[in-house]
Length: 294
Image 1 (cartoon, rainbow, N blue to C red):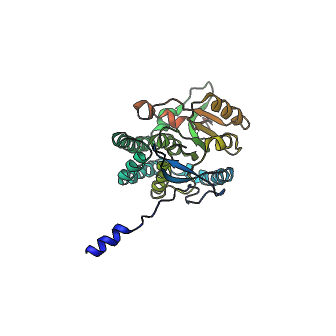
Image 2: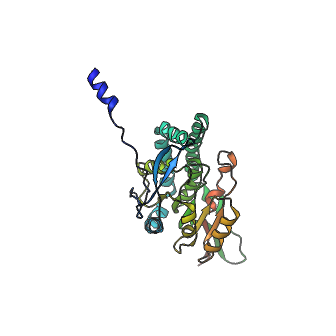
Image 3: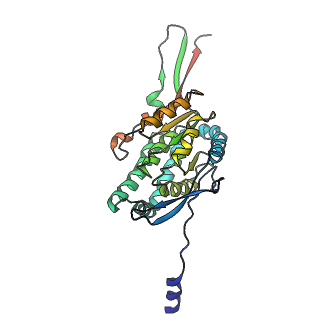
């Protein structure tokens, strides 16, 4: 037993490779590049994929392919899948706490962020089959028709996640987007990307169909323009508060009149960061006229 313990002590641990997540798979970046992530003392803690324009294009193709099937799934099923994500995240709670601490968070702050992320998934899972009742309407019209307005998913949404909230900010933007039937491509926090890659592993084990959520890591200076300008993206959610970035996103998004949702300066740990209007942000209103009478 002593000899076995000694061999175990001398063993070299297997370092985790933080890859991107596209179409339910974990490929290395097409560019072959990476950037180093350092702790507060300057020690390298991980090599992270530096996603490219080609990676983003591949992710959009996967998201577009998955969107009709995901939108066609009933609301109850989408809610159950979000609940499953929360269950899997709860089971890996200690891992996420450790990764957030590795990226500079205190023990208390890391615990609070992971717990809030789990609760947020449960919150939006509960809204899956209810938001239509709140935001849809039967409209009065001066003719012999029924007039209905209901919500439909926008389609493919690109998300530039908050840079200062590696896990909770990501979850708070992904959950309301996909619960409404959209698919998405997410650019993770540049300064705290480890939790995003591990969250992709949770998604992979939670019955989320491939392509519904795609997560890239990389430099915002390189990828923000592509997230805003791609012609097969229907909406962009960006959480960067810089005025220059906001202007760039709005100008590039205007090329195909994609919906622009700005969520800068939000305290993602507060109660005000969870409400059904976050679901409505990435929905379109369809109005139907139905004749009455023989």
